[in-house]
Length: 130
Image (tube, rainbow, N blue to C red; front, side, top):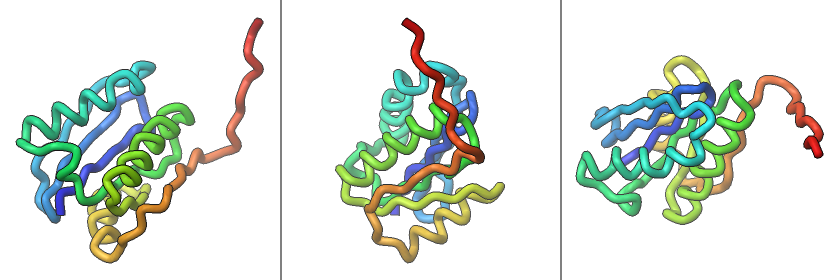
């Protein structure tokens, strides 16, 4: 099973590509405030480098949090959209061995239902300035 891993809870975003439990590639980049502009291109680059396309993805693992509200929101939007459009299972984990746990969870999961982040506290949204 070709699996894409996504972690967007901190300023440095991470993507991984696994064939079953074997790591094919792993990449991180300083996404900071440009995550929404860079994540799709970074995914495409990772897949192309390993001679795959988005359609080849058979499972998704995303780091659940806690972490940056905006980073998690962007990562989960991308992951849930991919899972829905590719009709592939998606799971979340958040321990230090999150990828290994996710790979194990994917073995028994067929769910393409949306997954949700854990922010670590209540979300505080400021009022927009004029």
